[in-house]
Length: 451
Image (cartoon, rainbow, N blue to C red):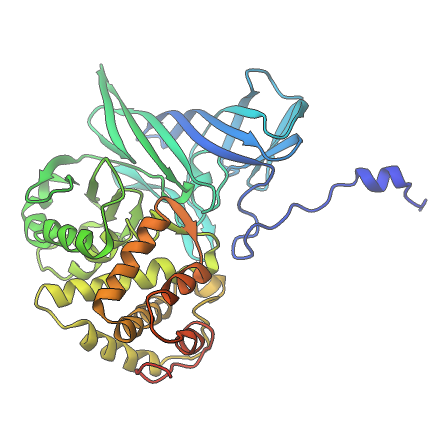
């Protein structure tokens, strides 16, 4: 074998940088997306999706190639970059690789249009099936953490936030929900075209489609607009199970700060059972099994609402900081219980501390690892950390801190270090013993303020 020349060695491609070790194949470099415009058609009976995604971005480097995340189940027919065909494009290994006709300089605008089609299905991941999923009569999208490429080409990383316009044509008997405000609904013969506008910066995993035979109505009693979307057969059960939505919203606005979205909040119940509820930007999705008239899902209803502040507006930079989503939403469950006459947050803290003490103590909250990022211990240990912080600084300072957190990082990204640094300004003493014991050690400490 001949020795490579310097020129050939220079030409060899370096491996793509890993943006997040928890999802090493997700995300792309060299550009930053500011907007997605999706013009799609979906046929329910045949599970056929087709259309065009137009992606507006800016080049962060001089670019000769652009990559996008896109599932292999979707076939790309045409690509345009700034109105012209590229030199070539190809899809493989869940990436669409576009070789540009000429180099795009740093700071230049990129408008990438991708025409594609296919029969979408969820991706098999470490956390189960994620993405676009057929229901018994309709469809849903469960995007967290890497399901967005199952239905549109994108830069799939929580740090890559953008605005969206989603236009989707479906069979007329079906009601379609997407993120943001419904700005247009056009009925033409057997097809209805729905157009939604979402101006707030949002990561791709929080963008969703929900398609089913639903009715919709306004939930009364809330200063923030709350909309219910559900099958007609579940109306009575919904009235009982979701009766406290307006009071939850009022409490969380007072404790966490203004609701982050101008378009309000949508609660959707599918006609199918779901293993767990799902959060999306401005939308919470529950299964029919969560709407059975028993009231057993109230903590989950509080949890999903809280994600609109913790996770959807303030989003982690990297998935290792997932406790900033799930620990905060879990603690919101305890706050609602305390407010509504159930067990106090302190009683719940003691209950779950006993449970954690009996489980394997090998989870590092600040870096649980990809296999455990959705482990229930992340949720409960994160909530316990916040409860202890509340005990140290007092209620006034604690809730002022949460409001500062949601305001300072509104529609942005933040990490554990950002939160611990901000919290230091609300404490009279050092919080390092708390962080060391609960964030950076695996043993479950005693349920008392470390000192």
